[in-house]
Image (cartoon, rainbow, N blue to C red):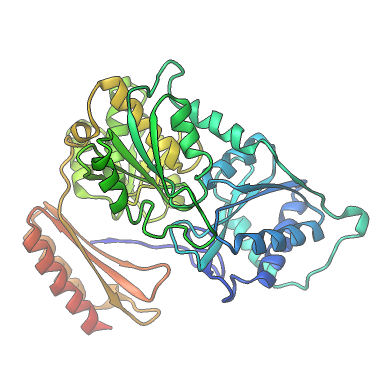
Length: 450
């Protein structure tokens, strides 16, 4: 049985701070204090500049202003980027030589949620010790520096162009997308101004959807979490592929020319196979506990090492460093190409796949056929906080029995959710009916034990 263990902090989760707007801590008052606390911690390390970007949800204006005020009160200068993808903020944090970047986004969630992510000066997630230091500072009374030391604010006018050029630079300069017809779904989110331009400037014929944000329609019936419209449009326009990004642009799901979805595991396989053939693949390819067993077996059949990290891009990145790897990701479409950039980037990941299509002359449907996904079935079982299933003999015996019946051709996963009071019960194997039945039985055991 595979288990997922994460570090518990008061405010920061595996992907920053996130929640419903207006409910603590996702309030203007808290964001003011958070900006100040972050400024204090970063300032003590000699920080002079923090950049702030956001997605398109209406609450971004409020939180941008609050963070700006808090950072200024701590004596830190600010550069505002406006609506920009999360990975663009990671990139611009590095190239603008800022000591940190802040993203205001709730990623693939609906508009009523929002959140905060931080990037270090290297364009990676803040170390946990820095997050802990910020949390400690939040417990102190807020004090404002002398007026002569207040942080100044400027807007970066050319941020969009900088990032577009960076994305284009991640595939060979001589490679053109001319002749490809693409449907690009920007989820009415942070990529709506940049993603179409990237693919268009590389020569593709681009048909857009989800590029009319109104502050409320981010991720609504569009994007990587709801790609049904994209699938239909690919078929209607006889397109070569569809690209569905999420609200903040760090995830991508694609659709092939038949309108069939190509998820993160399959995209990771395609990129890994290309890197292997080019001789540029290093270390292990890293997935998570939720990555399909079919990905692991397909990679192993080509002598490509595979490692599983805990769920969350932070842990994928940590495992990549441990295994000297350059390529990892999640089935949700959050893919990290460390040989191209420092964090998950939906546009750049899509470009790597399109480059393989052009270089190989194969369709996306043909490229994904090298991997066969195993049926997975997951059930969320409500639990009380602090439940310890490791100390529950009935559950452990049930897990062992299932694993014996799967006979090495499947997996069992019990994973406490990091955001909800549930345990995710997942069974994976070759036979779909067996997988569904086994998951149901195990979920019943878990429910009875809690």
